[in-house]
Length: 357
Length: 268
Image (cartoon, rainbow over all chains, first blue to last red; front, side, top):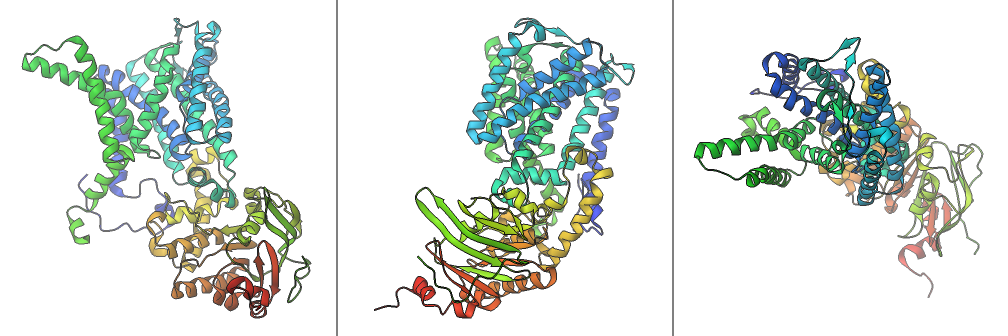
């Protein structure tokens, strides 16, 4: 990470529109990608499949929500419901005997259809009213799921996911599950990075920032709001299906309840609205820190020889990670992604930044 | 009330913009009434009037934000009355706003690239398959944008966020964004508000050059009479939503009703 930059000079527009314009960023991304490829050989499968795999899938899901909330500026509190639609459609399709590749696409598309219904609310109302409308739709979806035995088997039932098979290969190994999650996360990440440099991404940001100014440039904000909801819902649907197929193996309505919706929104906001790398950090904070803190507290109390009662032990991680969210947002309202960006920008010219002052 | 005119409005034959009998009411308030406006190709047309005289309402009637209650708007002969703003943009009308309507969270370059929106295709698959589908188009449009960036001398700030720029530069970025759309008609709503004499000079030069090099017709709303007289071919003065004079700028500004509207009563 310690590199010097004496100015970025691009000789043509292709190099000026690259995703990673700096060699250092490019190398870092390549390194992380390669590390992701060899991770199953390095990381014990317990950690790989219980921490890294859900982190990757939730990151893909959070990026989808970031598309609609961060890019297009539409608050969405019913994201878990949309994920549920994808998960249940895909699993039912797979149980029906449809190959998993198509089952995942079916899951994504049915999520898109339901998610676009949310969009019609977004065309009518804005801001807090939209948040409340999408929240209401989440409750409707919860009720439908718990009261339709045909879909979920009822409120206390769970639905077994058939064995995942892609490209004619049955996937049953831990490494296999990991690679599926990794592949999906990479695809979504590349899409989101491309969004930063294409007309679609610009149009979405235009709709977010000033819809009347967008209109006079020829941007039809109705169309782009629906497109944003449909695309983000597709990502949600496939992510939800993969979450069941590679992590939970059983689908239950509680996995997509309203607090999950709020958690994904928290991931996106803590990570940074409109930031791709931020979504990775945000998901890590929300998903992994409670477990980490828990481990530290247990280890700490054992080391000190004190006995902490179970109830306190259960609440400390929640309090700590709640405090962490507050601290992060106080330090940098644009989230962890911006925080990373600041540190990166500082290191880029260190120690010569004094010369600019 | 019959309006008195120094010269007539002109015929609509071959005109870029032709507005006839425009009226727009907000509840009981008549913001604009009985306005005729004809802009010929490659003409710089000034629109003046005291605050609240209906200049911006007239622009909003043309661009579809507030469709007129009565009257017709024709763009190069086609009726566009009441067409939605994003469709009006596609038909070749670009505009800037009085209070600026830049996207503050985006760089200067992205703001100007958005001006190319109507000339580009946007789609989910294009974005996903960027290298194979979208890249060529992005680069081609970038070249067009860079021409305008050079024309308006914005090279040094192209990667900066719009948010932190001084107002003179912001106005220039907005002009650039409107120009890259290659409009037939460019509507500039007070592009020189809050500018000093030097900045006004620059902006006037840019408008004249835009017409000379790009052949746009311009509807210029301005309060600076020196600018109107300096660069406009013809002009229209409004007061209380009605036309009070139209014609050659030097004659219109001497018109008693224009003087009355601007500096108060001449009688007594």
